[in-house]
Length: 377
Image (cartoon, rainbow, N blue to C red):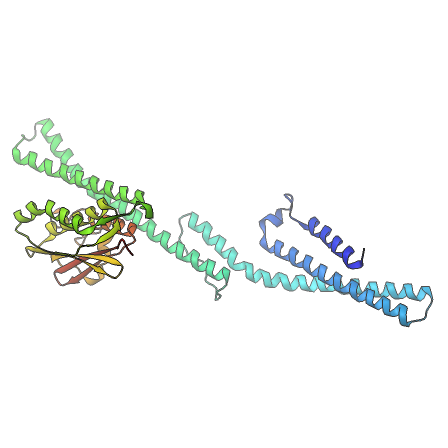
């Protein structure tokens, strides 16, 4: 067996001996220790290979060109071996020290990342310190900070939603409880107007619960590509519009529809729910006595726009109207708005259709629009 083969065999045995075991606590807990040990192993193998090669070559030259007794040859071998071992040990120590400080600088951002992750688990959404690097660690920290920001927004929305639900339920429940208690104790007598008021409160609660139920249904559906079918969009729009015909006539709201025929890829009930919520929005906020509905192809998508006159919407609030429980009226007066879930349901449904929603406001004229993919796209 050659010297190189023996050395490779021995280095393999060393590598097996250096593999982590369950008893090596620091190996399992510290990536720095892993990198240092791996680096030292590689350095040792390279130095050994280079040293043995140099030694064998020097011995070969000594035997060929030097005429000396056996004692001198042995002394030469021992001296060569001593200097090689000393140089190898010195090289390993220097390399280990340099490697430690260099790798420590590399590992430090990961330690900060771990600290930030622990704080996130406790509900403290603090971003990790950014590093001026675009390598894997830099991208990892950037992605972590983005995730932290999204989780913080989600947590704030959750708290706001719980507060809004409590507010929406408290008022009607308090009214119903107070009236029923007064009726049961004989403080007041039952009158048609009182029963009508209680009925309105019950309807408000029912509508709120139904909207929450619809939002929960669509959030849990998560429509996959296989659940989206080829449907005639003009048929869905016209059918839904016809179901509102009587109510629109009673409110003396004129309808102008311009719907282009097309087949879209979607869920029929979902698209119907979107149009229903938009028309309910028109009935609740209309101030002009007219509504215009347009549907047309635009490239690989189909765009539907519902336009009418309503209460003013500031430009900086145009995107917020699709958030859950968002109301332009901060007093949450029921006469000036609903629970603030209708547009949130629209956004959830359209998002699952891989489409977009938006609002274009021109003073009191508002155009709510959404897009869905065409069937042949």
